[in-house]
Length: 153
Image: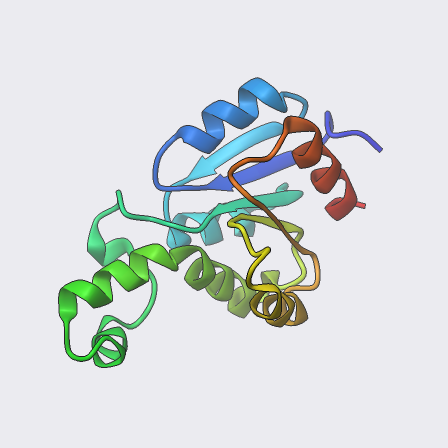
């Protein structure tokens, strides 16, 4: 199996992953979206083999964030600004949940976040999303390529 025939959906709030992956793992075709609604629309169009998902979304307009701001405000002791930061810092998980709820729970996905100190959290996510992998920021192109191939089998 190779990556040349694969299409990867990059979901991020900037352009760093698109630029870096295109440069260092150039084999697949890349498509990019910047929020959960756009990601769902791209997946519904078909042709996406793998999702590469950022965790933190602090550069998109607040109304584009997924998640219940009112509930997050309650969880953050009534602090609405802190609730927005919480939604931004965990937006990748909200997007993952949104995609799962809309029929893409088994879609191969790599989330860019270091779960090495949160193995229980990752195992919980993997129960709901069985084709989920993760990479830390300090990852080599070969490690990304290997994980992409593994998840696309």
